[in-house]
Image 1 (cartoon, rainbow, N blue to C red):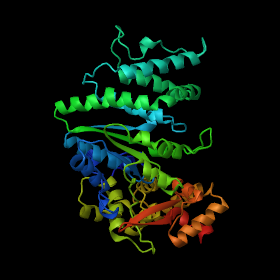
Image 2 (image 1 turned 90 degrees about the horizontal axis):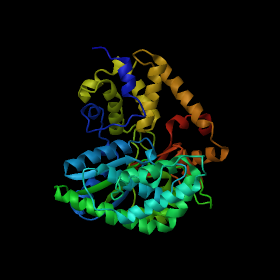
Image 3 (image 1 turned 30 degrees about the vertical axis):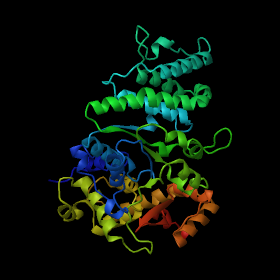
Image 4 (image 1 turned 60 degrees about the vertical axis):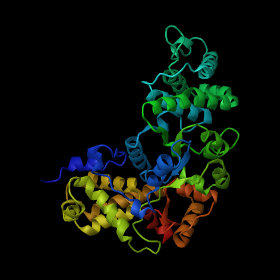
Amino acid sequence: MPIDLREFYQASDPSRTLFVNNSSDGKYYIDFSSVRGGDILGKLKQKITFFKPNEPTCTLFTGHIGCGKSTELLRLQAELEKLGFHVVYFESSDDLEMTDVDIADVLLAIARRVSQSLDKITLESPNKFNELLQGAWKVLNSEVTAGKVKLPVVGDVGLSADKEKLSLSVGIGEITAKMKNDPTLREKLNQYLAPQKTKLLEAINQELLEPAIAKLKQQGKNGLVVIVDNLDRIDNRAKPWGRPQQEYLFVDQGEFLTKLNCHLIYTMPLSLKFSNDYGMLTQRFPEDPKVLPMVPVQWSDGSVHTQGMALMQQMVLARAFPDLTPEERLSKVTEIFDSAASLERLCKMSGGHVRDVLRLLNTWIMEEMSLPLTRETLEQVIRSRRNEIMLPISEVEWQLLRHVKERKKVSDDHGYQKLIRSRFVFEYRDSGESWFDVNPVLAEAKELQ
């Protein structure tokens, strides 16, 4: 059967996260662990299920945005659920205003998502939580001038008609929705909650997590795991007192992130690994962050990484031929591309970045509008992408990029943090050692020749 161009385009959507447990998405999944320095998620799973099933654990998980972290975390969720754990996975960007995040926002978001997922489990009346939420609601109501904004009265915040039982997920949801949408209310509420962080933690642990885990174990479950995705996407603008937001949350407030009494996994911005405060960050958390590196498509000397390149090509081909074996897909390369060399060029230009290879492919399909896709159009797509990402680069940053291209290293200099965050520079792993290289699309710019 001929390939349906529209289906191929939709399957290569770079914004799509694969739910590996879903049979149709599972066909697109390629396991890159053999070229990424080992099964990082497998080791994390062992820590939770074998080494510390009955103790709280806390893990930071990082990597370039778009390198496949969400897909791997959803795969971990499915595997943990098969092993009898209750897993709460959520994307923090749905709950938080990513330009302005405080520790209380994160704790409330976790509490809401956990209580929401446990709606069939009846817990005792959460008195401390009730008190905190009522206080928070009074702060919100006092800040809203009459007639300007209509806020519900306390009875609307998750309290039942008899005003005895509080639905935490509804109560917190009402408050966090107001916080997310109004910076003034968010500031006032954080001023109220900031001095009560310890009390908030106690309420979450004693009135939600601990009784929930006890009930889950009565039902035959092995424990509770909370996966907070997209926290690596928080903006790094400075707080009013000058501290960059990422350092503030993960370094200054990091201890609070570790204090919830369940298994926790947070995604962390990769650029923090190159912060001057990284040593302090590793002191706040029980172990060093786990890094999901790029898929290597070439070695540091520029030669082709045969295994990584083969897996990257399979990822592209699987979007067109999900039901075929790897060998069968390779025999059909010229049904999609004008030559095998064009497919290799696509994978090389992605630098082994999963989302970038799909972004280039998706644009290529749209520009060409027919199969096979031609090398000439690919080169146009690459040039267009290069022009787009070059625009914000300063002369100082070009100099830093020349250093990376030449030395395959970065320092903890602030400029390098920006290069990593902007995905101008990628990190790779080889036998436990890290090396760095310029994004291949950028590497061909005349400024770097």
